[in-house]
Image 1 (cartoon, helix red, strand yellow):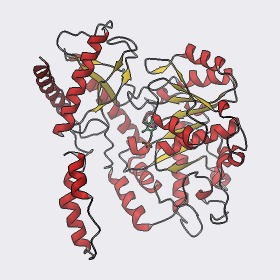
Image 2: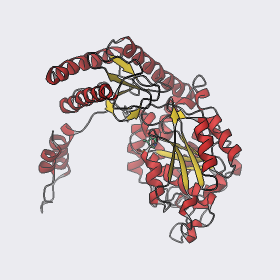
Image 3: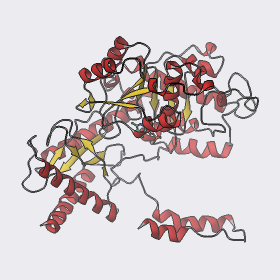
Image 4: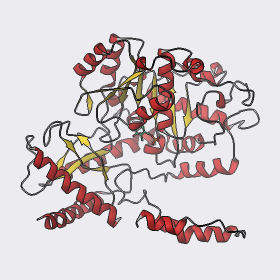
Length: 466
Ligand SMILES: *Cc1c(COP(=O)(O)O)cnc(C)c1O
């Protein structure tokens, strides 16, 4: 349904008369619910943030019903604060960060991280830490020299949140984009960029699973290279997707080296079937969070008041309860099985794509994402496609995606991404489709059915174009 139609139906005046709770609920059921997306449907294959883990749902409801406030501990969240700390420690352990012994956890500055509503907030705090590390006391004085606040990111595959964070924290949109190869940094180009911009780089960001193809960076190689070049540079890993690999000893080699990074963002609401929003920022050295702390007599200056260490956030609900319950509900073994099942499902879909004569796969799946394009009649994935051929591929895939959105029966995602593996032509900007294997309800039958559906849409689109 067109947005303006929904707008005209829902932007109504507030009535004078009160409504009963039953009537409010009936209004929700009849007017809003039928128009909601259903990401837990096995036909919704673009993302897969199903948010339907039973224990996580239980935690969501109980957190709302108990109305704890993480800003203070003593009177606001006596037990909830320690659930928050326990989940942060579980996440740290998965990443390979050291945790202090329980008896040494004497304040929020001994925890080594905190829960935020999303990866964007977590990445923003990471950039603040990089800024304070490069220019101590900027919290008090403001940014004095934005030219020394540059952040290195991989070109064309980075997430917008890093650039946005730099603009929000007064550093300016000071990104240095470095060439990639197979959706990972070209290490020679990274070395060269650090040499060229010596003295002005405050952070290097690496993706443990970029937001398009979920390719995991060569984290150890990047960390070694950056430390050799300038040990003062802040190393941040965005593991919004890559946290998944830490669940299983069979997959954790993918993120080898992540514990060398100064900070890591994880996004459980993207990969653990947890309702929005839940992310965490974790730091290698817990004490660095003092660099971005806030002191006020409105926040209790007590040892365990999280309000002191969470920039941008004051009052905060008990977000961590849903994660705590989900992790207890699965245990280490269940989390490992969940991760392995997704990677296997992505491999199965990749196999179906490869066996299809009109499809070309754009990435080698590390995690759960498979990006692929439908090839127009007469165009081969031979690595030497010319510009008109690339334009035809993109036009067909955009037309297919438009029909998918219009019909609302299936969902695959679409974005622009460089052809980093040179399937059509290295460096060409493609607009492929993406399948994501996050939803356990997606079976091989669904995978075959969505590809058959694409055949129909492609035939229809090409019929119109001819
Ligand atoms: C989704 C995502 C983010 C932002 O996280 P939100 O939870 O949407 O705020 C940051 N980085 C990557 C790689 C992501 O995929």
